[in-house]
Image (cartoon, rainbow, N blue to C red; front, top):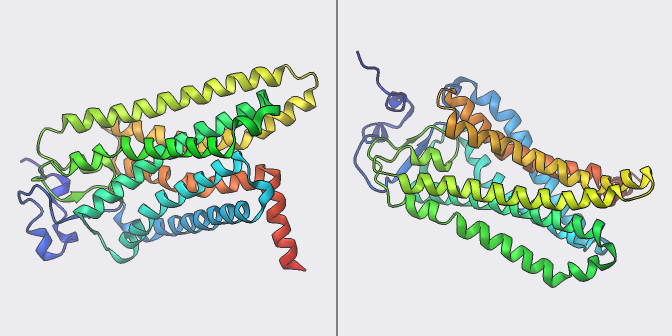
Length: 332
């Protein structure tokens, strides 16, 4: 006997009015239903605890970075401007997804309107692309600071930094725009149940019953174009940086100079590693359990916003000193 697909065996999770309509024919369904982490529903409450702590740390950490840079005029340099941009993108990505996840885990609030789902999809992916662009801008800043330090302020003037920031925002906002536009045109006649904890692009596309080849190939193009281009530019910058470092005569000078890049390299690893795993499991991990897909995708959303401010707070002397100064003042 043929087994009923999992996505059609969840009527007990839905309100009665929704369970009757989860296989209706519709182009734009009025609502989607997010299952959270399929297969781990019984552990949702316990999973929500680290999720909540992580989100709280992300909000506190990134807001602290923004406030410190805003108040201290000595930090009004390109490196810290780009760090503020990174903090804003982390706040947007985490806030666009995690509160809804927690409402699913705590209150079983699974419904999300079609337009809200597409908006979540757009903001999550567009700001992720912006974050990748910020890493390139940070690599450029490190390259100029180390390879041409005497012209750093001239090369990366405020106007140049503003133009770089505008380019990063425009690229992220425009290259992802076809995702929700195309998704709004597809017919969703299989189910309106998303086997995910947020409206991730591929999870939404899997619900369509029309030919979504355009969306599939465009999504693959965006992922490869952004990742390959940005990794290439970052690698090119650090190749030149390493060449400049190895020309320094003293070992102490080499270590100190390379130390100025360590925060940036750590943040890149924290962001790109779960993103790479998420991409590979979606595209090639067809036999990987679905809860593993979702957990990896959640790790990509959760880890960078929490760890980025911690890494920069610990590894960047200027920010570390400002934080210590705040705590010392409060303690006296």
